[in-house]
Length: 245
Image (cartoon, rainbow, N blue to C red; front, side):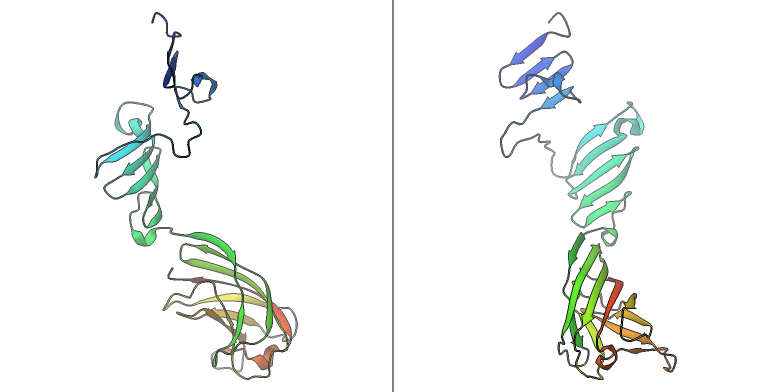
């Protein structure tokens, strides 16, 4: 070739156009990042493979120099020795993904990994704390957000002809059980019926929430709510708790 702009075309393989190289395409210069363009066509399984020996690393590196971390100011690095993929920025690891989940800033501890994020709905089961007997009620707009092991619930519950009963009442059917030896409280707003202050309380190892009312006559300052007290009413509530999964 006498000029950089000369065209080399190996049919169905590689095209070199000036300083641009195309694999599977004859027009690499048509693309935005065009120094190396790989067109994988319409095959269901196709792409680029980086092969590394077991125990070694394969990397895409973004450099702005030839010394120190200038050689990898940004990078995507897969380490076969521990099956982790790291994302580097400003010369350091910022995110790591491995079998534990998502980790940040070079942290390798399994306990600190973010292993789950999800949003969904759940169905309230209104129950007698002592007997577990279900009672009638209508629940709508009950949603949860789970980030790692932290679960946040928002719910609405309407009691319909709750049976006369002095036993404590609980909100069951939590989407995830409460972690053993952990407890948490949440807010509760009563729309009608009883006028006392109310709160919800998650129970260690269980899938229900106890409901309490403020009580200045009680030695503890609060008591569990029973069916006799709720009658016909509707309420909104929210609570955040820890789960094992």
